[in-house]
Image 1 (cartoon, rainbow, N blue to C red):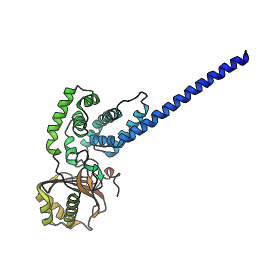
Image 2 (image 1 turned 60 degrees about the vertical axis):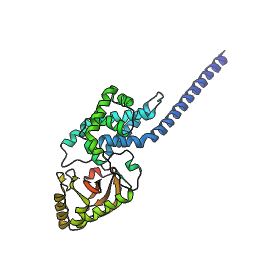
Image 3 (image 1 turned 120 degrees about the horizontal axis):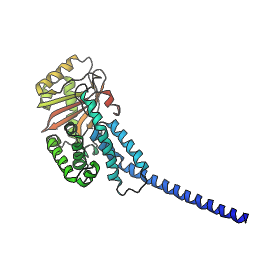
Image 4 (image 1 turned 90 degrees about the vertical axis):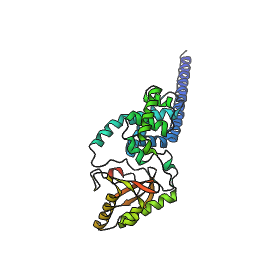
Length: 314
């Protein structure tokens, strides 16, 4: 009888061990599948987070947080893309309020962290969002911004956007419509090929470096604006500079005062716009993006705040 009891116990233990092994194998398989699904979506999620927050570093934090939540989901998820989009959007909405509070006390003009990509990168214009549009998005409410980006930029169906924002589809349609009207002028895109973009960027760098009034006058629109973001940490314009005449005076004055010339490191696409990465006359790293309209530069976006350039490869 004792031997029989021992055999029963052994069989019970083996059944339990087999069940545990099968469960562990299933968990491992599910985790591997989750890793693959997340890796497939991570680049798009990062761009969504960046477009929502205007900060690459914060977007990276959001994507990391979304992975931790995704990893803990036990049930099967039929549409990983929609599920992960929902997580990232809601995490961004949680952060937007504090981000905007920081911008209210920001020193000088605020610009998003520059997304710098190779001058011939096709993906640089994939989501059709430029610095100009991102500044316009700052005027929207968080829900309007989310509705516009998800539906108009990332092609998420309105019914799914409604689920993400926990609103009725009709309310989401109104949010997206209001946002679209508020940013329609900023969204106008003027296609510039890689060769032309590189040429304009190099021509502008040379003209501004040399204080060449004739060349600058030919490049700049009459209503050109210069946005310079130093964050109070490096020398930059404390206000937006408007108008060609004022811009010309500033470039000529800067060239005369500089002990050394600025250095062009490389041309690039910066948030969908032609531009370049350079060192100013005192060696401060900066990115410059150029808004082009009808062959003229109508906006210049200069980021010098070192906190916003830690991801830029020199």
